[in-house]
Amino acid sequence: MVPKASKTNSGLRMLLLAPVVLSGALLFGTAVGETRIPLDVVFSVISMKLGVSTPVIDPIDAGVIWHYRLSRSVVAACCGAGLGISGLILQALLRNPLADPYLLGISAGASTGAVAVAVAGFGAGLLSLSAGAFIGALLSFALVTLLAHAAGGNIGLRGAGIIILAGIAGSQMFNAMTAFIIAQSASAEQARGIMFWLLGNLSGVRWPDAYLAVPAGFFCVAIAIWNIRTLDAFTFGTDSAASLGIDVRRAQIVLIGTAAFATAVMVSIAGAIGFVGLVVPHAMRIVVGIRHGRLVPATAIAGAVFLIFSDVASRIIIPGQVLPIGVITALVGAPAFAIVMIKGRPK
Image (cartoon, rainbow, N blue to C red; front, side, top):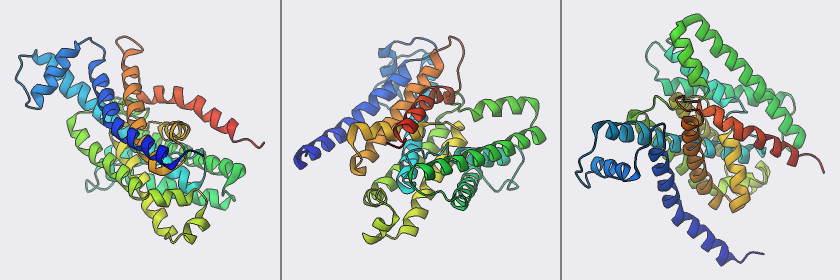
């Protein structure tokens, strides 16, 4: 047994290190890119924009660092944290190690909703891109849940397989709907841009996107932290949660709604970035254990760092060309998905 004081000290150290780790990742994402900019110039631009000092900086370097790289890194951090927490919530509520927004069709539904608003004019101008994505995410998850329930999906290996198959079916249907909307309503130029965006793309994000991503990311993490006890209780099933005095239906609505909301916002900004919600929670369970008191903040920070590093990799792997960030996360996530399936096989 690990002494309680040792666990507390470990959690405190992790909490104190989190801002340092996140700040270092943001600095890395800002300093590294297609063109080399000295680190002292990066510090000078940031200090100038924050009003700490007034150095003389090349306007081009200042624009690249502040308006392109830093804003992009901030949005990547928020997307990583939000998607990581969304995967953690879904895995806890469904008691399914393979649950994440991408595999359960939530990302596909959010993409369909966003494209329907942006291209087909769904909502007659009354809905924002994020609102359309949120509606699509909820519809997709509801469809997957109903399909899995009808097929007898619950918990255990068979249940996990049924839920994932339902998620694949839902994803394929909403992906087909997205393709139909693009083919029916989008011009050739719009279609190329949307298809690149659907693979996950942070190239066009700027500070206005960060003003949406930051509150959404903080909201998702805050709700998860507020419901840490609930998430721990759901680890042992809905009956155990109910026996502890938790309003199961209310908790499911709040937490699933939070996961869908975070996924919808991030998809509306950066497209469908897969596997973050699958890879990061499992990695953090190995590092900090299964108690959500430490798992939630660790997943948020690790998700932010993972997506920042993935974004940097998408910019520098092929000189002169930016890859969709979803390609990078899939290259990491697909092997991790295979490992989770292998470890979940019957003994």
